[in-house]
Length: 387
Ligand code: MUC
Ligand code: MG
Image (cartoon, rainbow, N blue to C red; front, top):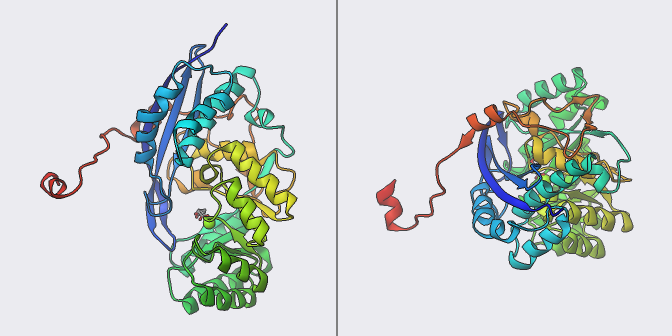
């Protein structure tokens, strides 16, 4: 019996964060998620998520843009297609839709969630099978205040939730950023490991100086110090830095991963399904990293529970995960929209055994956070009149 894709629905959901989250390029106080629901003719619905950081501040897709891309362009391509073959459905989307990696990842996740539910298997089984049921998860200290960050880290260590921390730097002067890192390392000592994410904010001379100072301050790793366009700089820095360099924003899928591996531009990759354009593309990046002896890190776009669990299902299949994961996105949100919240314990995340993503939404709660207003596309003088 044929099983078809009957409809694709997209929702925008806004959830406040537990505190302001300060990055080099923006500060956020809410997370905006684009949720996608793929309903199949056998009654099974798969879920996916596309979430960005600060609208268009971090990446070239916004949740509103993803909704538009899926509603207007992807849904007509998918409706009526065989729901049992996600790879074939996604091949059609890729043939007609250029770029739009976050939207494609959300769709692929929903198709795979539905397929795994139909098979009665956890999604990880469709991706090759789990080699671990518990993923180490770090926490990002990014309140913008050193003492608040120290208190936050102390509470995390005490409660057994996290003992690896990533510090967001690059917004302040180099000297101030290093003082911030050094103060946190002094306070936490050997009880915690610290790394930094500069989110592209430095130029090459600053990065070289910063790398030396961060090594002295006791940090372990530097994530994406240079703008993503400066690949030659990344290569030079990866050779000269006393600390390993992790590539993040420069990696928009397997082609970038191969290039950075070939030029020796990083010692570690942050693997993000959304940035890669899907779970399979992210898996290919991990394969390239392994082949090139580059360490793997399970990255996040600060997704909520759906995106986080999709990434977790994939990362659980990775043989090597040298730098752990940062799948803490749902913990940054002030409310869970799940019927049963994710299980964070023992400095990590437990993977559920139930079919598909292994999670269920509390639909009433999700509806409460749903934003219903239409996407406005008015620009120029009329925009003024309408505001
Ligand atoms: C990034 O650049 O890695 C991950 C953690 C966090 O706070 O921001 C994200 C994005
Ligand atoms: Mg990063």
